[in-house]
Length: 124
Image 1 (cartoon, rainbow, N blue to C red):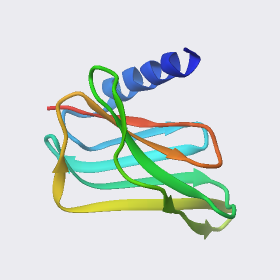
Image 2 (image 1 turned 135 degrees about the vertical axis):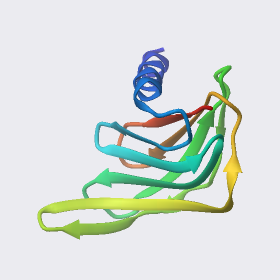
Image 3 (image 1 turned 45 degrees about the vertical axis):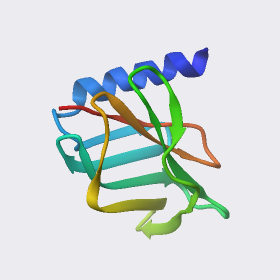
């Protein structure tokens, strides 16, 4: 129940801040998400987690407007990146020609080693 309330709160914040197309940025604790696209089409998704670690992986999941959850991608290994004192683990997905989503779909990322599931709402 707590996770559902949290997800609804994050979605409300992202929906209010996101422009009326697929481009959006969201953060949840140590995890960040960037979505790039046009309309209901998403071309590229990037995600990062603060810190390095071994075995860090991420996957994309979606929630429909009715609350159904599905795994969009399988687990993908993250790449450690260092810039000055900042350490991140990053992962990205690109779809040639884009991937279309239904209006109101929440596109989220989850990492296997930290809690946090930032979501971007795809809408017209």
